[in-house]
Image (tube, rainbow, N blue to C red; front, side):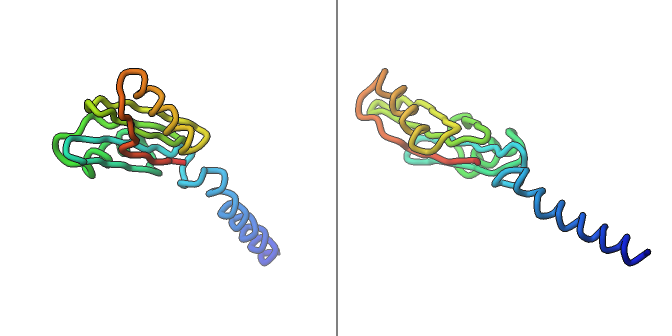
Length: 125
């Protein structure tokens, strides 16, 4: 009887381990946070697949260095920052994919400026 209980417990543990990460999402957490930030002279920082919004913001800021803007934070999505020729920046995100996030950032940028281009992008999911 003891061997039967051990076998059942082992099988249950294997099932939980196999299903757990898939149910949690690709980053291993229910919410996969990311953040983007940019600064002057080409500085940029990104963080993806983190457990918390503050953790993602802090990591992106640290990677960008001094003189960078407050990070744009997103969850279970892709995001992008576009910049126009005058230096104005816009943020776009999408739960679909990178292309959709970039299109939204560029569209917002083109409403107020010219020469828009994507400066940085990331997907947290």
